[in-house]
Length: 450
Image (cartoon, rainbow, N blue to C red; front, side, top):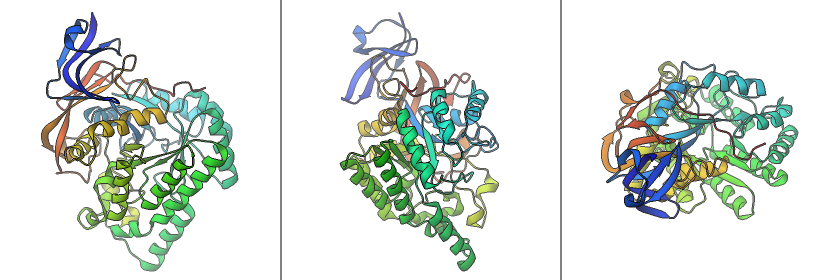
């Protein structure tokens, strides 16, 4: 007798999509096969007409715990994740205090323990002062290290070049990875000051024009060079430019250990929405022109992009809705809406379901050393699933979302393809949009980390 059988579903695996059953015991996948050969189970889910995907891994969320919990917290953010088919998140370190020391890391673990509906990992951050903390942070179980090369929420400054080189060496020697917000801060501050002081512009498009694409390009090149020289694996969060993708392609062809993420927002929005949505879509890096958006899609379709994520970044209404773009907070929610938005793209034929699943499950699990515990449907892996109905249509309505602050540029969007069940380690945590039970998510750390 096992705990759960999911039967009659179309199971998405790296080898293809198969109509088969899945058996689960003690939170682990123990059987794959036709129903007549599966063990008897205490619970059965009939997945007829549904596709069974590995639970999504959103490697880029800001749940704001600790210190900024008026925006979001681990309970509300993880509830939104569960509603959106996400079973594992990795939370960013630009909290208050930032996760720059072992003490801050352990305190954050203590604060969020028992409050997450999904499994979770935590990043550390690199600063000018914390090089001596890197080894102990690795030993404590950080997923990797976030490098803020340009200004964003919290404005954690990028370390100077010499210190950064030594940090790349140290992280590389630990076996973990550095992931960067890749925008050159010196240039960023130069253009921002120029726009504010000389032009006096406060309109939403000024944010885009103050962060031209070569600001990202220069930061991407810098990170790739450091990766090549130190051997430290390098990941680029929210890559947004044609120039940046070209550098990633060249680096990969030259054997540099570089990976890249793109956001749902950059894939689905372009600069034509500034006039309609205003400062709601202020984001770092900004929503760009269609030339860059097209390059992101081409990067996905040709296999150069590794991950699709959300940069789920909640802010209050007061922080977002203002006439002055420079006072508007950067970022918006996304962890709950990403799956239906992207399943709509699957239905349009822009990406296959199998490849989309790889970009949101298997690849992030491999990059952050959670594979094969997470990210794949195979015997021995965690029984994390999202069951989706590719034919079901709906409308994204901000009022029905689970985050504390529900401002989204996708409010009112029609979607085709919705999650019906989210299952975490064999337990149903969401059915038909309703998140149930109490938070049961566990902290995860990289497999085979020190």
